[in-house]
Image (cartoon, rainbow, N blue to C red):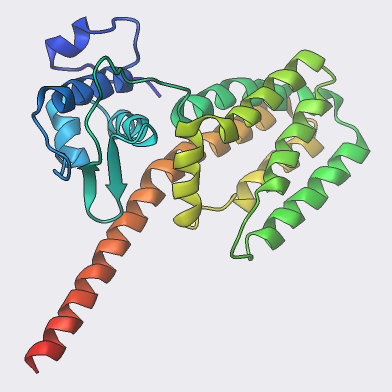
Amino acid sequence: MADQPISDTSLKDAGSNDRLYQRIARKLFDQLNSGAFAVGDRLPAERELAVEYGASRPAVREALIALEVQGFIEVRLGSGAYVSRLPGQGEKPAFAITAFELTEARLMFEGEAAALAALHITPEQLAKLDALVRAMAAENLQSDVTEEADRDFHLTIAAATRNAGVLRTIEDLWHLRSTSPECALLHAKARDAKVRPVVEEHAAILQALRAGDANAARAAMRAHLAAVMDHLLFKTEELAVEEARRALADTRRRYAVSTG
């Protein structure tokens, strides 16, 4: 996902090697540090920040998550981002890999891995993938999803490339998904929003692998991971909207009781 041009020249100058979301986070951090916001204040809405910085919504969300995992802000579903604490003297924002960066990397590596796997995959590995797709469907019906079947599905494909370097790279990417604070936070929000592995997308990858079609396997994997990016952005947003609607309905009910 390419970062869009930004309109604020101060963002362009600060940290020229930073990604856009990092420059946005530094700008917000500087505002916290300068006293522009007090503890408990609500930050501008995501859409407003996107317009202000000429940035994409994912970049703004990444910036807010980076500040949230460091305890500077709290993002409340259906309400917005609020200042939790102000920076201490000499404190600076820190960054790990974000969920969008990780998924972008996975799209690059796992797309090619699927193409290579289509040429080398064994009947036993195909049978394992078939079982994992069925396990995903069963796991999606549970209230608490571990996503183990999803992980095993992707690592089985990596192993099917018969390339230890490819397997190690994809294992490391999956490890980062749970160990990077930014990744872990957004995926936790996605689970709360009932985002589940899409069985049909994995079945399409399996179908291409079974056919030994490298181009189709690459395309199916890339389509799946592009959809993951969309789910991470929009499904978590849908949850926030639904939470706001429930809160409004509850307020109306309480008001009706008190005035009835």
